Image (cartoon, rainbow, N blue to C red; front, top):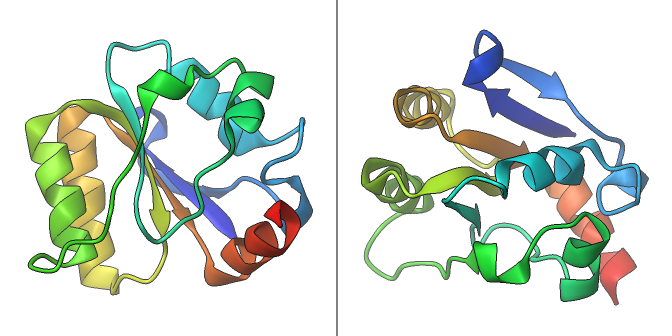
Length: 135
């Protein structure tokens, strides 16, 4: 299940897409990322999720130069990496996995709300589907 934390809409999580739609032409995730990519900030994919190809980004009118793939840290947890990105306030969106505790997710959501960044949590099931479909 793909959920989005969008604090511009009363900070609720929304189901955005079924597995087969995530990187398709009708993807709500990438439609939203295309809007967010117009800001002067980065679209960040964490190490927990697959990075779309340049052609997939172009299909949604997202400039590849606006997208960053974060590598995992040997020193910091995934949550700490996301919190650091949010504290710098240079991302309009972060796409990450959903392998966070309830408390960690609340901390991420609160920090995202304060910085105006949208965080998209992608489940393990969708990540596996994406990996199969990309190869």
